[in-house]
Length: 269
Image (cartoon, rainbow, N blue to C red; front, side, top):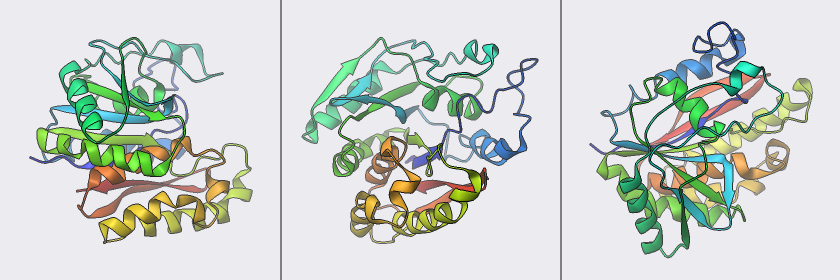
């Protein structure tokens, strides 16, 4: 069955695994519980168990789109100033070299320069949400980098090139945060974050696929865009998800509040 394309939030650092006595139990901070509950149901809500997951994280950028082809990637603990136990988390899912090679082929066929890589570990934009979604770590995963120029149209084009994977049993996931300004106070962000979320959701859920892609590519013209994303690396995974969504209908898949700011997830198909 055809798998959807998703844009999901991955939280803040290891936010779902902060209990040193039992790192696998839900976070004690209720702020994260709705997001954690959403991620925990992510696989169950797919049409069937996916053959693999292809995930694009806001925490990996390369000069060209780069596909991780490792068989057993380690974890890359690319967060800072968290409790020691959060640097000992385990999530030992296998890689999927054959699907990685297929993804690279599709990108090249789409006219996009692409590189291969096999040494880098999965960053926390991959293993943190996926550890919640599939603690059994039994579904193969391929990670795709962002392109360093953060060009929205190029990332939408990459998603379009990868869309055939959905018919091959691969769920495509963009992992970021729909609002990502960690420098502002909660009260300062509340109103602009609402304006941004409403505008972004209206663009993402536009029923016309061509207009939807154009509106999302022009994200920086939306209200409070640069307040929501002083740098847009956590938004660019959405562009890949939009492209991979093709002509399928889009909808809000989840919304929760973090420090009073709305954080949205989207589903295509």
